[in-house]
Image (tube, each protein chain N blue to C red):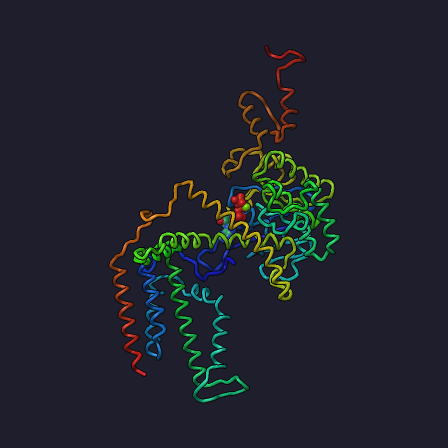
Length: 291
Length: 266
Ligand SMILES: Nc1ncnc2c1ncn2[C@@H]1O[C@H](COP(=O)(O)OP(=O)(O)OP(=O)(O)O)[C@@H](O)[C@H]1O
Ligand SMILES: [Mg+2]
């Protein structure tokens, strides 16, 4: 399902002395079935942006088109529930939303709210738990007895169990160990490739953006300042630095190598691309290692 | 939740903002006490004039005060309606069973409404112009004499400032949790009463769990930095009583005297 923003402006606490414009004239399209990454300095409005994707926030000006629904300032708060089922959002530090007695019940909470029978909800929950790699013996434990990383998986499963068409994740890997990070990213790409789920990912990990994303949206001070493929977004290192962003580590490495006589075109963004371009340039012949 | 203005601090540097929090607390107590002495047009007029004067000196836009009153609208309406229907005495305009609208009922409803609004507005003025932590400091300092009778003033003040400090944090957290549960299909504010009560559980449990976790973290952090609850703690924020504080205090005492004098007019 395609989602697009049409000149969206958003104010927090309008009409008070605390009024703050968190989004300014944002227009963008999130293509259906693709992997879109949203990056930007902290406070640039990323979390505000994604809360518009299922009408948790409504634009103060402009409008958001979600599939065939239009959301603007005047949209009523009623009948938004179907949207919440099609667009699933995993919030920043989602472990804060757990409340049920057992992990399984917590994951099944979402489907039950959408009128699924409790048996069907339990099945959906079990399947979601398997997808995120939660061991069966954890399902009967209290969610509050789990480690932070396990809680994170439970929370992600709680949204996956809704079987949304669009999955939005706000820094899902923050605070996870390398293994946990890789697991989450593998899961997300699998959902996108195998189930054609539309993925929107907020992240500060440029390596993940380079490796998995098809589109990148760069936010700064509430506005979209760049939009395109990772290749276009990462083409200008100085521009990135100006926006408190960095190159992916492979590209950074390649950039440093280019100052020592190596040549890259285009700039490699992933390790594989780097290796592929670097290997032919190395003055090594078969078996002749420098001794 | 974010549009809730009641009880919030609005940064500023007006004459009222700069007053000592102890003075503002005393002024507020005097004013509220005096409101209960007011009984006729002239006393209310005087109180209203003093309130409006203070609001002007605070340089906070009037519409924000009105927003501050809004959440209390139903409470006000309820009190007034009760007074109108159940207040008895004087000329009877309308009667139906135990309900009646009488002259005295209308008058007392008007007076109660007036008192309510005055008290709410003066307290709102206090919170609009004084940082929560300054209020806590002020209360601590005003309670200081109680140390003589071994009342735990410092502990009370710490509890007060910690809780005031975390009100906005908890509100933010509640908003976040509500949004997360909304995304999982919870419909706040729809369905019957039973349904509504059920939707509170998924907010309250995470909110409590986080609050307790945070309390543990804060106490550990405080102990790690050597906090001890004791008699001889010094203060980072010093309270300074200036002549403006004395002047306003004298002004309010004069107002109190005038109100008591004007009472006799009826
Ligand atoms: N409830 C709120 N009331 C007022 N201002 C807010 C509120 N929530 C966020 N803001 C402000 O809006 C701006 C954007 O916030 P947002 O949470 O969208 O940033 P972000 O890009 O997600 O940052 P991060 O990377 O740190 O998560 C920030 O400047 C923030 O201070
Ligand atoms: Mg954020």
